[in-house]
Image: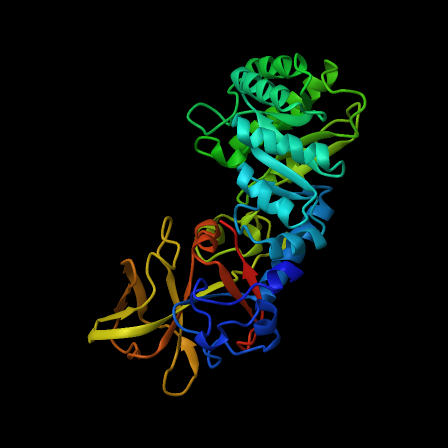
Length: 422
């Protein structure tokens, strides 16, 4: 854990942590290697599996290496510098961000390469970015441009800021009508590139987009759009739009649902005038999940390439058992992701014996602000005081509900803590 995070004091801000740890530093608490179950942690408490996180880090590192891909995992998933550092140690080129605040978090924790997957038109943010680039020659930032008006606003703000270094930009190709951001046609992309060339503050370095936004996305339509993206890069190169002083041309795509298609199509990129940085941005892999990405991971299609393991488990306690068919735990919308799927009851830890068993016959049917509604079938052995371990769907809305998350080994030993910054 970086020193600045390890030195932070444990207090009331961090839910689920032992009350008797008040005043300890995070590093001191981690060194105690307490048990999640008997070490004073209070429910609800979100835990990350140390073994699953390590497995997932290695799985994507090896996948990217096999396919000749660079990797800038999306930091918005976790906003956790501890995990950013481990992702970079496992071969990541840098970290992807969605908004300037996330870039600031990356910079505060030593990330030297950031891919900002958005067009930035806020003058205050552009002033900060320009100052950061000018002050730190080793800092590399690449961001999107998807409109002529956006280019005009970026240029205006950077000129007003007295920018000395040009801001590197990639033209974003939209994934189709009704999709999210991005210029919709190649002609519009060319107009954006022309606008960039007319500035002295921006430098065109490549193309990018997000394939999961293809309407009705399937393997065929996603690959067809990716071929449009790579053809756009080749066309820009053929027209001499990339400055000869560049070290490489950036071509970037790849969320957590279609990185197999990205690998396939990026392997087809023809030789260009400069080396190509084939930049994948999948972020949800680091924790994986028990819902959205369990269903959508490309490893379901290519199991010979590997697999990811869900790392989240939310532990909550049964606080009411009003009838044979119903129970309530003390975790709700404040604690669990629920935007895509409800939590999944997986295991029960007996308050009487400490034994852990499958949560057979137990289903989460709804969430209130601070309660999970459980349906309990005949024979479901659940009583007040038991802990229920739940799997979660959608990492991006799980991390953001917790500021300090225990990293837990299989036997329940807490070996570290993951600090988030949302």
